[in-house]
Length: 503
Image (cartoon, rainbow, N blue to C red):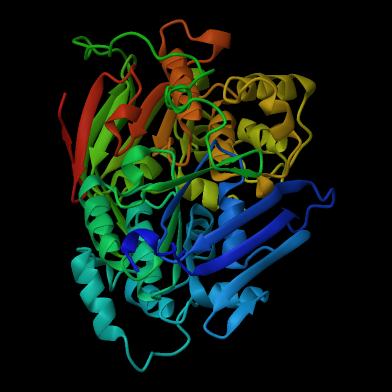
């Protein structure tokens, strides 16, 4: 028989999803978040799930993993022993790396090292209960490939966002799953580590199936050719609208104008570090920093994973303290001048970061979360006024598409996507009119439209006549040059805990 007449053989299925709908656990309203999902996940057929924030991509990955159970329909995991409906089969054959997983490790703050974290991955366990009989050589070899050997002896709570993400990705590979589920896997990785990981992942992809979610083209390797689209909880083969419109951030405020030049004559000094060093777990993370922020300045802080950028922002926010011999001085116009008390610092200087989002342990709705920003508290401890609620709603409206803010305001933050939460935490930071905003990778997890809206709002806030009476000076950290707001006019770089001013 000629090859032309031979029948086509489809790859074997890994998972079959048959008309599945579901709601999230703990939702008393039982609101359906995935609708009639039908999908045959085939071995060796790598796929990217695309869609806006809150569309259901992360929920779909959790379904494939066996962490969520259908309210309607069936899901079958195809094992060597046949098709099974038990979610234990899904967990045995898959590994998931997601922002929610990373937040859980940060929230728990287990006293384990990077090596323990990887070794526990051999058994797909959160922590290491006993030393494995084998696998330590594989752990060391993989750490070497990813240039992460320096993280092996480090306590996990001392790792930066990017360092922890790198180790979580490595531990998923060590588990050697048949199905690897990667939810915004490249967020927080600097360019060299992103390349190292994708090169290594390409080798693993020859013997496992990978499903990604991503909002950026550079977060998908070229060998992942298939695209599926998720919109309003439904799985689509084609995008719901032209890809070019989505990529351009259709419906979002446009970012126009040129970058502002660096100021020649600085205004009043708002923040000043004098020979500031910071120790975490007796390890020196920042070294003798001398730096200042003046009125009219907006800073971009660049640097590799683990260079100390996030620690610097926490120092400025009052969440870390300078060692003896160093000092931090603050002069905040909105607080009538010099500020020394931590309660006043926290009202005038606001930090938005993955870590602060992860450590926010209270379950509130979106509006309550934003209102907690008036006191910069974790949770609400007083009744907010009608005026404060109105201000919170106005700020939220600037970050969500038309009509979206009202729905998010009444939804529990535990049922929102990472991108929706990121916008809420910026809204939380803006209420109460702070003088300084510290933004640590603020665009991670945001789709193109949300990024455009987010950055346009920052540029308006930094303008000399900011809208709605809001104004703030920015200190912005990101690995993506395209995310740097147009208002940025000063730049510095962190390397090994030392800060160098570039312009």
